[in-house]
Image (cartoon, rainbow, N blue to C red; front, side, top):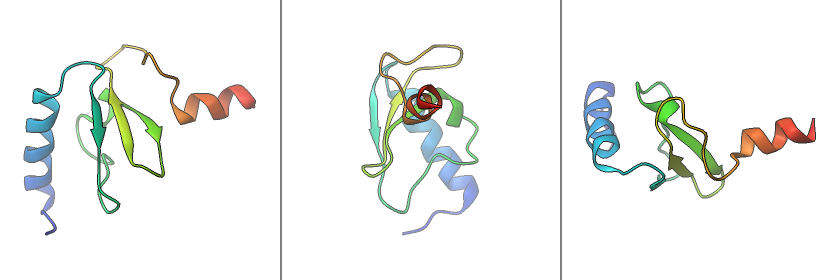
Length: 74
């Protein structure tokens, strides 16, 4: 089932509020955090598995994200 954007935001906000800092979030193949107001609370850990870790605003993740690894490789 596809949610409209407003419902997707509401469900996503409920999940974000419920998940503790450093908690893991696994999404389905057709799901993403893109364009949601809390997108910057998460680091992508595994793009193929759609696995994210919550870190909160201004907090660096304990695990380096994929983007950080690619930047370090330069």
